[in-house]
Length: 212
Image (cartoon, rainbow, N blue to C red; front, side, top):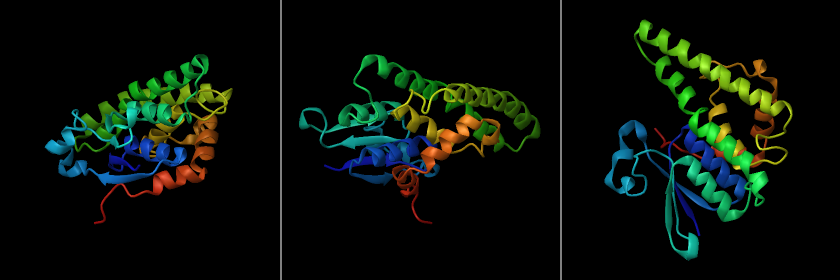
């Protein structure tokens, strides 16, 4: 049955569209235009009480009953459990997947997101302080990732996982973070390899905005 994806063209939305394509799950997109406040609509709040995208509704959830899931990390976890793909069954192998998924959710997302915010400010003083603070931390996070990928093909080891999809959504915006991936060659190698995957290409191509 077809999963309903409620999303917009953001890093968090792209994480899930990429995962759905990689897992080969049928889905339809319901665009939630966050620039117009559609995330605050009562119908959407029943699915995502934190009024954030993305969210999904799976009509074929556990026990064959529908289920809704909000928060992108929870969605990736759910889809990995549902399909058994990109989600190891062995607990030892699963630990690094969860570590790097939490790394993205707690750091490599909120911090670059602050860069997005301060870049757009009109006040030079406000912009300068925020960018100095959050761009330095963003570069540090890229450095953490680069060291990890120096000895690993993917973030959880030698196998692609949901952690890679989570981090890819934000690495996709590296130019907006004012990051030159050439400064982080292992991240660059990983990024180029993932962006060349056919399912990832499809995941980034699916329209998550309405036509103007």
